[in-house]
Image (cartoon, rainbow, N blue to C red):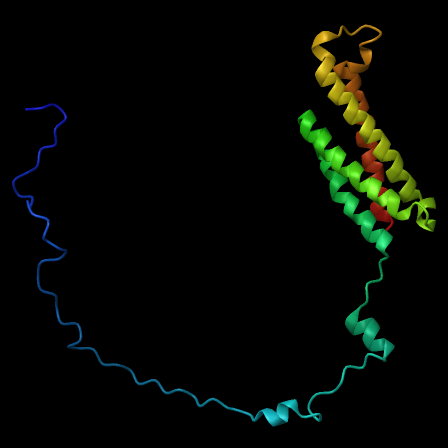
Length: 198
C-alpha cells in the first residue's frame, strides 16, 4: 500500500449522480391554513389641495427674524474659518513630536502645514487681518517648524559622519530633542490662541 494514499470505504457511493436527500419529505401543506390579512385603505388626497396657494405660504425672506433665526446665517468670518483649518494640522504635528515619529513623516506634515501658511499669508498679507496676533503667530510658527524640520533632516543625513564637538553639537540628539520641545510648546500656545479666537 502506498504511503499517504487516501483509502475510501466500501460504503461510499462510487458514482456522482446522487444529488442531495434521497428520501420522502412530509406534506407540510396538509395542516396549513393561511391567515386573511385585511389591508387598510390608502387615503388619497387630491393634489389640487396640496399645491394650492392657500395651503403653501411663501417664505418670508424679507423678515429679518426669519433670516436670523430660521436660516441662521454664518456669523464666523472667512478668516476664522481659515484659522480653524490649522488646528487639526497643528494637533497632528504636536502628536508626532510626542510620539517621536519618523523624520520623514514629520517633515511631510510640516511641509503641508507650511504650504497652507504660505497660502494663508498670500490671502491676508494686504488686508487688515495681517495685523492680528493669530496671523503673526502662525507666520512665526511656520518659520520655526520649517527650521526644526530642516535640522532633523540634516541630522538624519550627517549624524553618522559627525563627531559631537563644537561643529556637530547642533545635530546632537539631545539638542534636537530640546528644539522639538520648544516647538511643541509653541504649537500648544498657538492652538490655544486659535481656539480662543473663535
